[in-house]
Amino acid sequence: MPGLCRSDPNNEGAAAPGPSSSERRTFNSTARLRTDSVKKSRPLFPWFGMDIGGTLVKLVYFEPKDITAEEEQEEVENLKSIRRYLTLNTAYGKTGIRDVHLELKDLTLCGRTGNLHFIRFPTQDLPVFLQMGRDKHFSSLHTTLCATGGGPTSLKLHKLDELECLIRGVLYIDSVMPRECYYFENPTDPDHCVERPYPLENPYPMLLVNIGSGVSILAVYSENNYKRVTGTSLGGGTFLGLCCLLTGCSSFEDALEMASEGESTRVDKLVRDIYGGDYERFGLPGWAVASSFGNMMSKEKRETVSKADLARATLVTITNNIGSITRMCALNENIERVVFVGNFLRVNTLSMKLLAYAMDYWSKGQLKALFLRHEGYFGAVGALLELLHSS
Image (cartoon, rainbow, N blue to C red; front, side, top):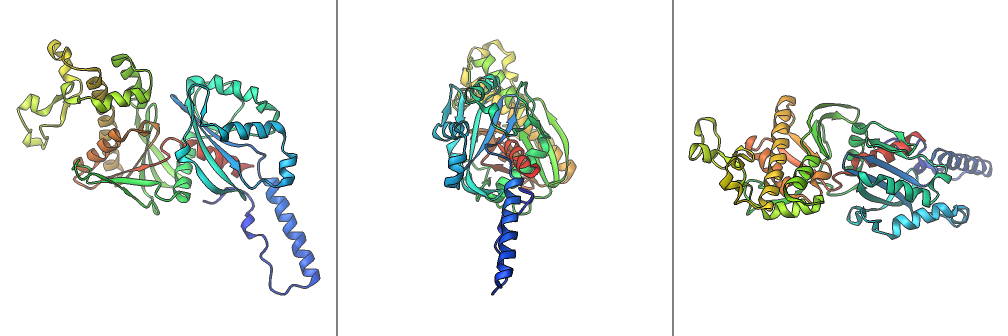
C-alpha cells in the first residue's frame, strides 16, 4: 500500500560493493540523513485513527513494539500510561471493548513495527472516552487525532472524508491480512453452506456496501475513482431501534440472540400465503416474503408471536431490503463483485448468509457476496493511514 510515509526506510543501507573510506563516510552520512528524514516525517506517538459512527465509535491504535532503550527513556509518562491502559485491558469502562481476535501483530507502518489494536464503544458514550483522555492527560501530548464519520464531539479532530477512508482502509487491511475476505459456498443449500476464503487481489470494479446505522453503496473502480451510487436509511440502527421497541432488548447482541431463536414466517406474509404456492408467472417462490410484518395485521396472529419471532422478522426485513437494493445497484452498474462491510455484520452470521443467499438466488449465480473479517473498522484504519501519509 503506497503512501504510508513520505520516506521509504526499506531503501536504507543499499551500498555498492567495496566502497572506499570516503564513500563509506558519504554513505553513512546519507543514511543518517535518510533516517532523520523518516523520523521527522513520522507523526509523534500515539498513533490513532477514529471513525465516529451513528451507533458506534471505532478506534484503531498502533502500539509500537520496536521502542529503543533511548526512546523508552525519553517517552513521557503520559504516553506510557496511555499505551499500558489500551494494551493491557480488553474492556474500558462498561461499554468499551477491544476486539482482541482482530489484532494485527508485527505490522510495519511508516518504518515502525508494532501491533494494531481495534477498539469500539457506543457513540453515546463518547463523553466517557473524552473524560478518559482528560484523566490520562491526552491533551498534553503533541499528537493529531484523525477521524472520519459524524457524531457530536467537543474533541479537536482532523476530520477526513468518510468514504475515502473506508475504501483506503479496506484495500490496506486486505493487503496485509491473509484470508481477510471470504464468501459462503453453496449459500442456497443450508446443509452444505460453508465459508471459503476469497483472494481480493484484483478487486476492481467492486460494489462496496457499508452497513452501519444506515447504508451507503459505492461503486469502486480504483482507489481514487469511486462514486456513491445510493443508500438507504434502513440499516443496523433501524434493526436495533425497532428491536428495542418491539422486544425490550437493550443491546445489539441481545437483539441478535433473540433473532437467532425466532421464526420470521410467523410475522411476515409470504407469497404462498397470498397465492397458495409459487407465483410461477413471475418466478416468485412460495417461500419469498410478500409483505414484511404482513401477518401482524391479524389480532389472532399478533397474539401468537414471540419477541424472538419479532426480532427475527426485523432482521430479515432489514437484510432483505439491503440485499434487494444492492442487487439492483449491481445490475445497473454492471458489477458482479459485491463486498459487504460494516458493524451490522459483527457476530451476525444470520444476515451474512441471508445476503449470500439473496445475491446468489436472485442473480442465478451471477453475483457473489463477499465479506471482510474487520467488518466495521475500515474507516478508522483509513483515518490512521491518512495521519501517517500527511505528516
